[in-house]
Structures are given as C-alpha cells and as structure tokens.
Length: 370
Image 1 (cartoon, rainbow, N blue to C red):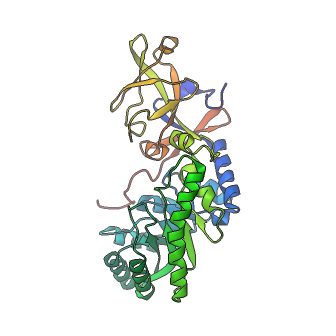
Image 2 (image 1 turned 120 degrees about the vertical axis):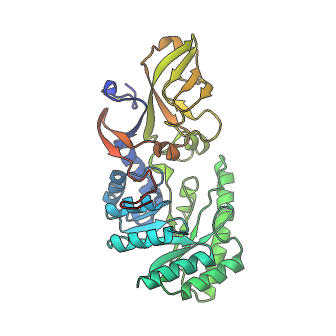
Image 3 (image 1 turned 180 degrees about the horizontal axis):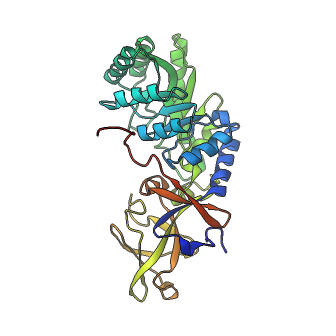
C-alpha cells in the first residue's frame, strides 16, 4: 500500500477530508527546524482551523499564533494559546466582539492589526471605556496592495498616533509579502528581499525617531525559509502545516509533506473513458481554473465539468474502475478546502482512527444573536 491508502477505507464515507497525523507532526517539526526555534514561529491557523493541531504546536513549544477570523481567535483561546494575533483590522461590531474575547479568555494575550486612523480611534474608545489595553501592530503594505500602509510618511504618522492613543499598546510592525510567488527560488528571493527592504527601512526610521519597535512579524509560507535567515523576525507560515498541490507545484524548494487529502468515489460512469466523482465544488475548493485536485497514483486526467456535487473527469484508465471505486486527491488549495468540511478524518499509521472537528470553519462566536 502507498502512504495515502487506508486499511479501513470501506468505513469512510465520501467525500471526506483526510488528515495524516504523522505527516502533520513532521511538517511542524520541519517548520521549527527552518525557523531555528519554535519561539520564532507565529503560524497562521487559517489553513487547518483545528484545536488538536494547535495542541500539537503547543507541545512543540510554539506559543504565538496568527489567525484571520474571530472564530479562529476563539478556537485558539479555548486551547489556551498564550499569544493570538488577529491578522485583520476589526471594524463595525467586530470591535466589540474582539473586546468580549479579551474579557472572556484572560489567559490569552490578544492583539490585532491596524492600518487606519478611524479604525484605531474606534478600538481606542472601546478598550478605554472597558478599562483595558489592547496590543496592536501597524500593518505595512510591502507590495501586495491588499491591506496595510504603503506610504512611509503615512505609516510613521499612524505609528506615532498609535503610541499615544489610550487603550492601545503598540507591539511593533507586521508585513505580509503574499505577492511574492515566483517559482524560481532566486527570483523569489530577490522579490522577498525587495519587499523586506521597505519594511526594514520603516523600522529603522521609526527607531531613529525614538519610537519603540519591539517586535516584527513578516512573510508567509512561500518566503518562510528566506525570511528565516533574518534575525529578529517572527515568521508566519500557514499552508506548511498541511501543504497542497499548488504549493507542491509552485515551490518545489520547500520540502513539506502532503498531510491532507480528499477521499472521493466513483458514483457514475457516463461513458467508457469518463468517471463522475462525488467531489463537487462543495467538497474541494473551486478557486481558479481546473485542475483543482491532483489524484494520487492515477496520472493525468482531463477535467470535463465541475458542479456542486459532481466532478466529471476523463482518463483512459476509467475502465479499470467501477462505481464505488475510491480515489485520493490532493487539493490545489487546501485552506478553503478545509473550510468546506465540519470534521476531518484523522489517520494514525495506516488506519483512520478518529475525527477532529474543524471548529473554526465558521465565523460566529458562541452565544451570539446574529
């Protein structure tokens, strides 16, 4: 049997998300090795959203975490993660929701990103009124054009304001270079260096002006190993925990293991060389054009159509398979695929042994009216 084939596959319904616990643990070990120590890591939990995976990280000595939603932040707090960054600027009711998390989970140190004066004032007012102080980070746009302050003068002015606002405490700078995605390592390194140079220049200027820049967070998974060579940075890989086909194809220099697959079955054979699978886009992320999944041990296939509950493929190997036959697929993008499932079937050795709920796949918090 190959590494992905399950001894008790007949017990597993399809479609299912399958996690290989030994491979997850190995990826976490490799993350720590690349970082140099677990203390440098602030892994993003948006890829897996699972408390048991966080507990594996805590066991390795990882204490700082990053998340994108308040549900993910609550999931982290419930397993007593010591330090949680909401890598998102809270606006509207999310200001109060964040404050309530801070008040409810006293053993976790929450913080968030800011890139806007009005958002900063709203947070300041809310936490001052509650008699609390929220740590915050200035989000720096280093070239992605999504969030953060791009202009150095505006960044310095906002940082200065954050140091003065009551109810807030500035921990430092945050930068994400998600636009750096060259397949060639030399080109990716050059692009990562250019993005970091903007970040470093702002950091030096703020320190020259006498502002404290105590901590700095930079990068994501594609540039993780590059920035690990820079001293004084917290590193935020995320997809490295589970890996996927997109990263396997685009970043061959990063040697992480596929630790999650989708299990699907043939539900119909519309013609001699065609198979219809129960892997619609409610079971694997439909982001981007096909192929959205790579079938392990099966070679290349033609993707004919993809709908809510069906995926039709074409392959000369179709006659080998009957209705009910099992295929194992590696999603092109694992993060949104995980969010499609309520639970993951967890494999220890060669057998599926338990299910882990994907606790933070939604966005609501316990007890909320809306």
